[in-house]
Length: 94
Image (cartoon, rainbow, N blue to C red; front, top):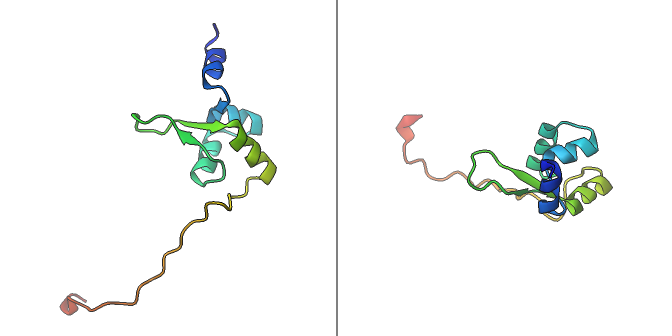
């Protein structure tokens, strides 16, 4: 049996970054960059490796195509407020 066919049968509807890149006509590294930026949701299946092994669901890929790569609004980044300066415990170190 062909290894690529076997992999796609085992994963069901999970896509690798290379498969998504082929569909989008970009490089796999560009797909990983989109994942890191939060524009495509993915799951890291490489828990024991140093480098993440991302898999993208077909639904996440379809959402990316529909919304044009805009960041998801359901998970906004939290902003932190700056606290007022506290007491200077080491004034002589300035």
